[in-house]
Amino acid sequence: MSESKIILTGNFGVGKSSIFNRLVNGIFDEKYLTTIGVKVGQKEMKNQKFLIWDVAGEVSQEKIPPTYFLKTAHILYVIDLSRPNTFANIGKDLDFLQLKYPSCELHTIGNKIDLLSSPQEIALRLTELPCTCKLLTSAKTGEGIEGLSSLLVS
Image 1 (cartoon, rainbow, N blue to C red):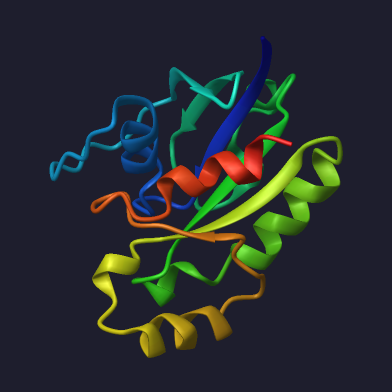
Image 2: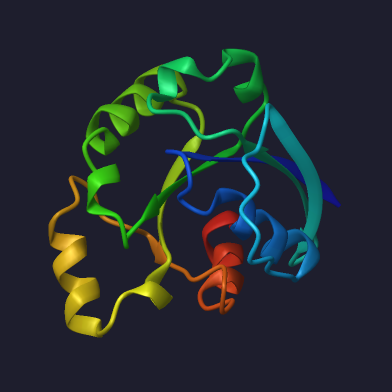
């Protein structure tokens, strides 16, 4: 069985740890606890083992230690669609990650769709982004979480 490393990254409070917990443990916890450093877990999907790193949120991806990205196959950049005020650095972050880690597959994940009132509101938020989300999720309801396997397993 092959093994790949995944990093969950993005701004503070976008739901990286909630996606991690839903994916690795199948649970959602209402309590908000800031990740300090990195949290690591494993998940098997379609006969592949994934080592998943949940990295503490940063205002800029340049602040994350480069050693965290060693041997990483996939970067999941998580965006909180319910908070447009967190959209400001997305373009800069994605450019930095693509330039600094060109061998990693970079995936943008729009999270917290459960907090938006309608498909029209989701569509509007997506037009405000400087990127295209490859997957829409709600770590709270679990919607879209299993879709991560289609992004990660070739």
